[in-house]
Amino acid sequence: MGTTTEGDETMSQKEEIIIFDTTLRDGEQSPGASMNIEEKLRIAHQLERLNVDVMEAGFPIASEGDFEAVKKIAQTIKRTQIAGLSRANDKDIDRAWEALKYAGDRGRIHTFIATSDIHMEHKLKMSEQQVIDTAVAAVKRAAGYTPNVEFSCEDAARTRLPFMAQVVKAVIEAGATTVNIPDTVGYTIPSEFTKIISYLKENVSNIDDAIISVHCHNDLGLAVANSLAAVQAGARQVECTINGIGERAGNCSLEEVVMSVRTRQDLLPYSCGVVTEQIVPSSKLLTTITGIQVQQNKAIVGANAFAHEAGIHQHGVLMNKETYEIMTPESVGLNANKLVLGKHSGRHAFIDRLKELGYDLNKEEIEKAFVRFKSLADMKKEIFDEDLDAIVADEVLRVTETYKLLQMNVSSGSFAAPTATVQLDVEGEVKKAAVMGDGPVDASFKAIKEITGTDYPLLNFSVGAITGGTDAQGECAVRLKNAEGREVLGQGAHPDIIVASAKAYINALNKIASIAKRTRGDV
Ligand SMILES: CC(=O)SCCNC(=O)CCNC(=O)[C@H](O)C(C)(C)COP(=O)(O)OP(=O)(O)OC[C@H]1O[C@@H](n2cnc3c(N)ncnc32)[C@H](O)[C@@H]1OP(=O)(O)O
Ligand SMILES: CC(C)C(=O)C(=O)O
Image (cartoon, rainbow, N blue to C red; front, side, top):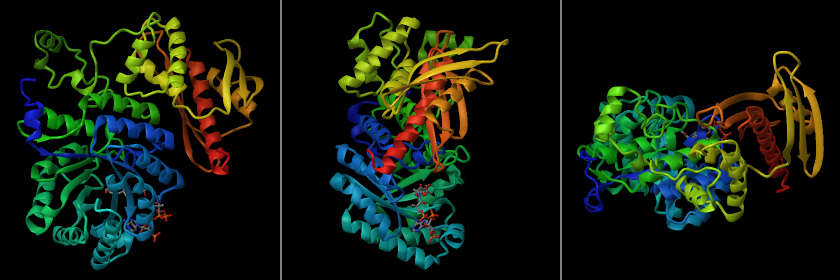
């Protein structure tokens, strides 16, 4: 791009912005984004390919599952720093280190306590002095395990500045090497956040002994703008998530902040190590795993981010892409010159495309996905990346199957009552049911319920077409609530939308069964 200054030599002389990804912790706090250990590990591998500097893997005290996920990630990921969150108390910090210790000096304890009046008075019921003492004690305890300690002043953007300066000074003295200034409730605006960071730089005598970090939420849609303002004021770590997922309206979006820095080197002359070509694969993997779709007009990773519809724009782009494109699709991992995949494609092209999409599958997984790819290619002229995402989600990312769909047949229309006949393999036993319903999906779900003897509340059911055209695969998501009140997302894809719905329902039942087995200690 004519307007950017890239190139390794120039980049290496620039001040570095540390990219701290919190998709697996704050991102996971998005309603419906809970992931199991295997899913978190897949994202962790992708974050390593994306080359973020730090990944926050979870909140180890939160649950057995989160502890195991952080531990597994700390044991498996070899290059990236791994952070674990803890409240400012001994038991959280000890538990965090128990999981993080496998990463050695790449393990980071991230401890926090709120510093705003409203949080101190109503939530913590602590005085200023108690908060300072608790923060200092927490940092000291964490520093006893590792020098890699981050401290966050929760709700910093609504904290009185002289008090925050006192806290920041004290935690740096106690051993914090990164001090994070979160806008926990997405309240600040860029000019104010600039003043907050500048204030700390000017009024905390030991501020240069730590990296200043920011962690912005998007309640007013300003998370990225606020993060960039903070960087310009001296912050050197940005906390963010893929697709901007996170608590409430989400967090600062990684792809937006990284591409802003890369694209506006004239105003943001910093370097960051993110391999931007891995942005779209990361976004897609997250969508596949969580089922949370990205809005079409989402910057960088939305379906329309590089689409030009208007004639004047199309004309301009045909003459010179830079008339309407400020970055190339290739730079974020959208490969325009791809081999077309269809029924005549072989394993080499197939594996190559899966790798481009960020899937690192073993031989057995590739074989399963390939068989499914060929059968889809028999029904559909061209197989798109989205189809491959759905195949991988369906064939590889799914949990151990207690229930397998063998066959189904549905009759429906405007005349007779819709009827579904479904045959399932239930742990080796073939079972069948034929049931009428209000519609074909309702009839299928009733048949599955009858066979499996289950009746979990259905919270949500959504249907979408993965690609365009009448031969597109349908993609369904089903959200059920298990007996313990936990929400479970099931996904299924198939060119027949009713079969896709049944697969999604069965996928959710399999997840519930696998949670129950884990709880009982059967697996
Ligand atoms: C801004 C953020 O995103 S912070 C991270 C938010 N993420 C989460 O909360 C997800 C994971 N959380 C959990 O699983 C649970 O909340 C747990 C395991 C951490 C705690 O569960 P519980 O012990 O049942 O407590 P609960 O969540 O109801 O209340 C929080 C308690 O922690 C205290 N607390 C809150 N923040 C902190 C802190 N930073 N340091 C010390 N104590 C804190 C609260 O005052 C309250 O204490 P109390 O039980 O003495 O009244
Ligand atoms: C724990 C902190 C960093 C947080 O998530 C927030 O303040 O939003």
